[in-house]
Amino acid sequence: MCFMWLKTLRALRSEYGLQESEMEIRLEKIRKKMLEERSKRIRPSRDDKVLTDWNGLMIAALSRAYVVTGNNAYLKYARDAAEFLLSRMKAKDGSLMHRYRDGEAAIRGFLEDYAFLCWGLVELYEACFDVKYLREAIRLKEYAIKNFWDEAGGGFYQTEKDAEISYRIKEAQDGAMPSGNSEWQL
View (cartoon, rainbow, N blue to C red):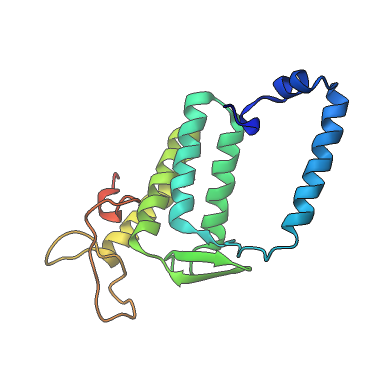
């Protein structure tokens, strides 16, 4: 049995003997009916925050996609994301903030914020050869070494040395997301 939503519109038109315009009218009626029913339910919460670490990964992926495909849209999106993070997610002391929402950057950056944004900026530099991205990646890497490195045991802590917490952890295992300790490539 083939589910309807797996069929192409062309196959559905053919099966029901409809012209393209008739099919569009029917689909619009169905869409309106679905929206009407959906509007009766409580809307799910929306997560609209911007995270530095996830956007760093996205910048790396978009930059690589541009290199592979030559599609300028990927490079534009990567640059736009990088410019947003570099202009809005840095504190006055040069550190990174983790989250941006409702016009406010908050929560001191974690190791992954530095590692993934550095990775994204290096990939972006390799895609467009704009040296400002490489310079910023090096600056962030140096900041991370100075503020996250464990002099006694090696490796990087998840939080800065002057973080307002009593216990600092080091994550060396990759999970669903890579660990910040495994990402340093500079």
